[in-house]
Amino acid sequence: MELRGKVVLVTGAARGMGRLHAENFCREGARVVMTDVDEAELNRAAGELRDRGYQVHAYAFDVSDREACFRTAERVREEVGPVDVLVNNAGITDCRAVLDLPERSVRRMMEVNYFGYVWMMQALVPDMVRRGSGHVVNVCSVAGKTGTAKMGGYCATKFADIGITDAIRQELRGSGVSFTIVNPGYVATGMFEGAKVPFITRWQDPGKVSEALVEAVKRNRAEICVPRFNVRLVAFLRGLCLPKLLDFLFHLLRVDRSMDTWKENRGRPF
Image (cartoon, rainbow, N blue to C red; front, side, top):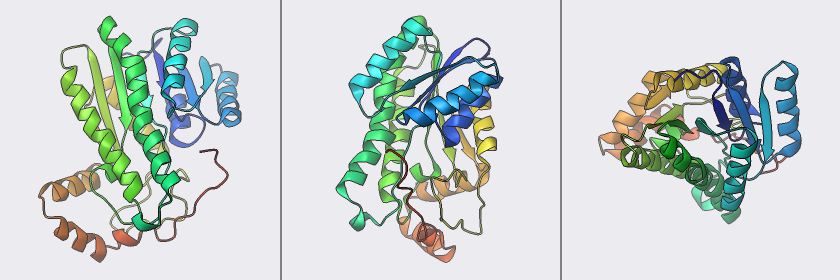
């Protein structure tokens, strides 16, 4: 897809990966719609990009609110234009053991990480289908390929994201709307502050992951993994339906201890 002049909407764009996605699409000449629940940080990030001469629009709302998703979609269509590319990026985490997870955390992760993706697709994809053109990027994770200790709640949402993306891609085959699943490994954005990366991998550069995402849209890739080998290996091993083998390897390589030192960021309005 040629991105110059296209309208690209990125959720969770105030910081981290979303902020990078917005900037990288701007560099491609796209008109970027940045959304986030944190209005102050969103306006700051959008202002910085506008100051650099990019065409940026900011809309503050909570993707877990289905009605807000539909209202914002309509506003964007009227004020900016039809959305050509949707990047479902908004996400939160709580890296505690399953039996220690508060109810609010379990519900909130599912509401933002999964339902938010579904509501945004329902709000924007029908118009893409009518126009016979569009692209949806669902930012998933290696955590959607296999469960990992102290990431159970987050993993569940990413399994769901991958599953629903596979389903809608099949449902809309031949419609002109394409879908991309993006599976990063451990990304150094602060979301997993304090975590210890197993020695078999390393922290991924957020900029590299974002560049790979934009390239995937341009090349219409159905799924990408960053890093490619590690994520695909995990997916392959889990696909063997021998979970105890993966449990053994994760314990041997200390993958199951990587979130023991995770630090919660209580300053974010999630």
